[in-house]
Image (cartoon, rainbow, N blue to C red; front, side, top):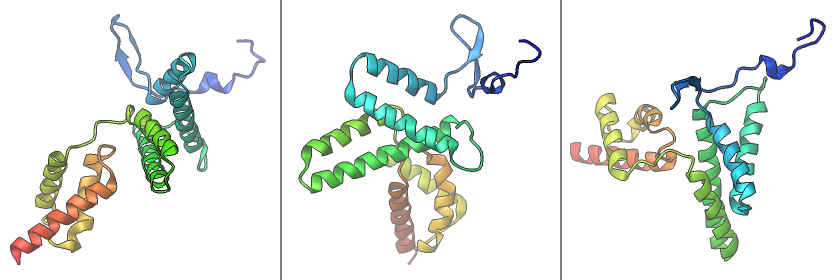
Length: 186
């Protein structure tokens, strides 16, 4: 670079990702979820898959909006991207339910198709048994009993199930197990 030239911003930035040894034995950066979304968007555009293209564009827009929100722009981690994708999937489910309730089946089906595309990038959801076991362990760990201990249990469970179960589903399991424990004591 010439001494009078100012380096561009992209020359300074460090791309997020983990260093990992590839199949060829060389160490390189593992692609982030955002990189995967971009690559899949390109593939969907080439395949002329309108639903997948539209969904991935909306997801990448949400991620970009989140990156520039706040005091300073920053790159998101995979965990933060998963939270955004979970939020988008939930929006699609709710919109599909609203459209179905209003008798607009075609739009409901489109929303469900978009939710299915987004779900492909999310970690596998916990089964009811797995979630129940995690909640039971948290109740035993915190010693909570009755509805008053719900906050303690939720605080312990939420990091363990992050991205793998919806908050309302977790809250319902916690509430039912705390009520069961209160009834067995009383």
